[in-house]
Length: 328
Image (cartoon, rainbow, N blue to C red; front, side, top):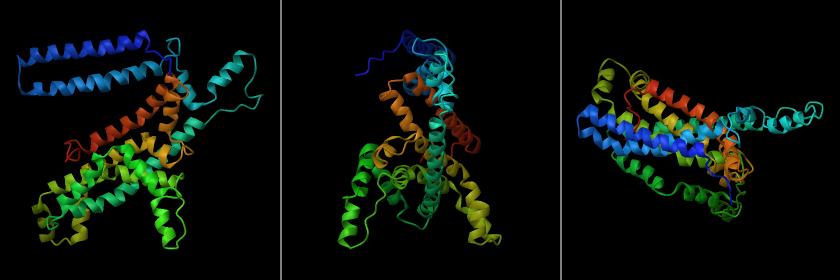
């Protein structure tokens, strides 16, 4: 059982967040002279403050403090050098870590790089599979488009953990897939606890996040624009390159963001399908919080990871200014 307690600073941060919400609510009433339609956004504002802003402030507090509550940047130095704490203790004892063969630890940096690579692969695969699927579903003459949308959404009604556990059951050595292959006298498929299984789990879970924004944008394209391009002599390929593809960029950017961010931060998929043998940056953060009970280092790693999330959000805002690919 963890004996970690939220320090007084953490309590003050949450209190300040609540007070800030009250202040914003008062300012809203003064500016709008009472109740108007936008008041319905107040529950959403409260949700954002309590469940997003306050936790982020708490993470920031832990990231920039040590166990005594003093300001420090050691948590970020531990990201760059995973042996930083050990080397710091050796230096305090009068030893030279370099003379003892303790070089800079690159575990955290290497894990982040590997996580970025896995998230990139997942995003590319989802884009390659998702765009043609969304294009077919958005065709005016394709009557099964809405039905396929429902079929893609239905698995998302199921718990994320259960969907991943289902793939673990399918892919394990004595799983359903290998039993069928054995019945057909075919070689067994041994991809469980490998990067291939993790990529498969990522693509399965995040593919709808690529398809739906692209489908939404493609459905909004005016058919008259397509017909005008064909009337001007453009064939199907040139119409797609010159008209359809540029108009679908907001959906593509939104889909890339919605796939890349959860793929970068996931840890459940790598735990279950990777057998905890393949670590992603999400697994390292989870271990710091739950196993090492080091909330400060875990928060520092989370802040580093948040940089990439913010960059993704900025890119989305630049290319999707009207929010065309944000929702169905």
